[in-house]
Length: 85
Image (cartoon, rainbow, N blue to C red; front, side, top):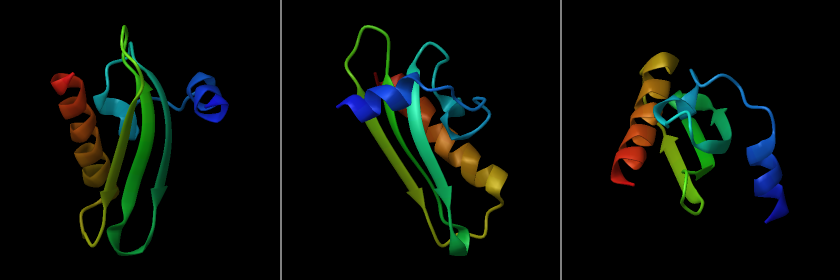
């Protein structure tokens, strides 16, 4: 459990990346990646205020969408998770 906690407390990249859909008040630790055939992914552990941690995994594959569109789709998942909680 120490590794995810250290990840969440590490300096983060600006939120214009994949975790952009999550509220700024949430602590976030994530690992993004890209690959061939349009593969784009984000795996995150997030801590909403007043809640326990939530794990989010988003994988996109076999797409011709531009990277900005793929990142926007992943951010949409973050917004959906935030709205559901």
